[in-house]
Length: 152
Figure 1 (tube, rainbow, N blue to C red):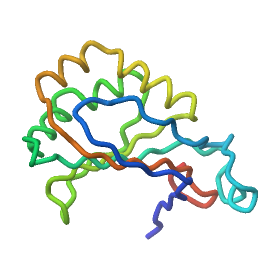
Figure 2 (figure 1 turned 135 degrees about the vertical axis):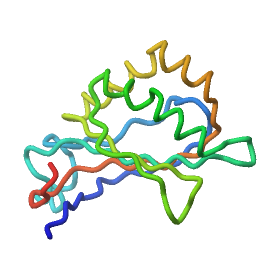
Figure 3 (figure 1 turned 45 degrees about the horizontal axis):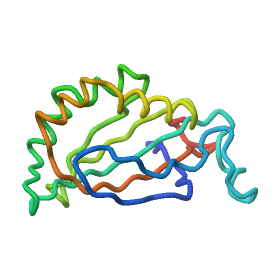
Figure 4 (figure 1 turned 120 degrees about the vertical axis):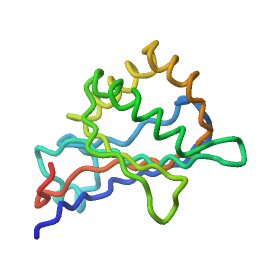
């Protein structure tokens, strides 16, 4: 069985909060990746940008993983899709039951930035966040697929 392998591109970071606060942007990814030359040869020239996000519900602050799942189930995924992101999958971590993991795909870095700008300005997001205010910690990773990956 072939496995899709994604090459990690430089950056992961963590933040805490209920809203999608302003954070540093991701490094370039996709075909215009500015990886060092000895790494960029591994990235497919047609590569999209992938983003893995791990949200852990902060139980100490009243965060509840079931409420977070309901927020995603009800509308969060569809708001992202409405603004052009491809939501590849959403997972429940088995080794950390308070953590939801999801993966998004974008055409390139500019597309990612456009999606997040539109998502953040969408009144539906404000309403959803008010309905399900789950305090979270997040880890975020940006990746470009390798030239031999099945998933590009």
